[in-house]
Image (cartoon, rainbow, N blue to C red; front, side, top):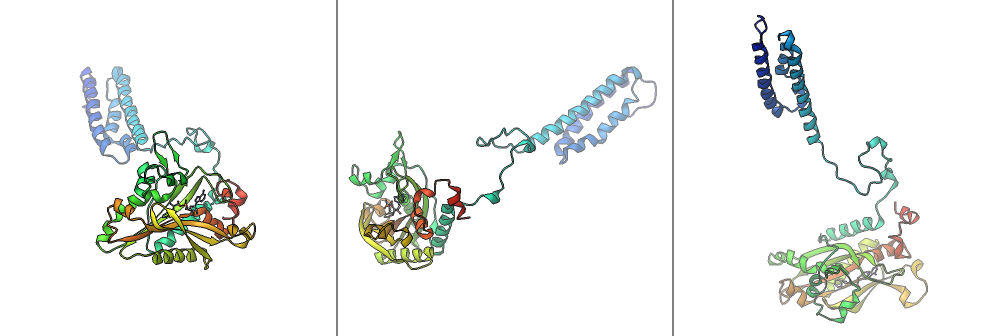
Length: 356
Ligand code: FA5
């Protein structure tokens, strides 16, 4: 501390004063590191003592000394400023922002109130669908929007060069990666992940929703990008009867009524036997009385092929199971009497506002 005797001021006092500034800086530095409220450093007694000592310095040297004390104060202010800047979260750069993110919030265009928007009907319905399956004892797993040939075809028992590969008008990258054409690409992963359930007498019961992509000719019931939900159920002694009972229970809950349904034989390499499941269209969605207009195919399903179980390390002699893949848009269309699948991605507010 600068305590002065009050005797004649000499150069020696000035030099002592300089030393005391250095000592005080070190003390203040340690204090600053400990302080929660960094600005309190400006009220530290060590700093006050330096200022008080100015008047005791030789008048000739006083202004030079005072300048050094002031510089220390400015230095402290800089410490405070940079500690505040370090504490401030660095905002991620939003490249979609239609304004310069460096402008102050007051100068930015006002965002629209969220009350003006609403959740997309497909999201609402997907949440509802997952909720029903969860109540039926299924867990929900996420899929992925880029995959490989093994999961798209091989793990699903599509032999190489088999013509059935062409049924899935698949988009591929130059590197040979696949935009999944169905959520069945997740079957092998889910079976591997949950097969330990079987050893403790529990079933594998999982649904997997996600977006899928096909190089399709578009019409009222065909999109190139649409949603599916895959389901798998595996345990001992599972039969086609369990498959039908599960799908019927789900459909009755989702549509809130018993619908006319039709199960007809079909072919998928990964199920045996395989079926297509269709429901009767409500009258308002029938263009004419033809048999074709009467039914809309909602999903493909069947008993999981023994080769698919084997490839996931599950013994088909002990366990059996069923799987299905359900188109979400078509379900939502049937429930809400929507005549064209292309409305969903049209960004047509008149259409979307009906679901608010
Ligand atoms: C499949 O995708 C099989 N992976 C389903 C499956 C899973 C079978 C598990 C057996 C076991 P499919 O190509 O039929 O099958 O499509 C299933 C459902 O997706 C159809 O019933 C339909 O509801 C929907 N879907 C198919 N193509 C389109 C499309 N272009 N636009 C809208 N929905 C479609």
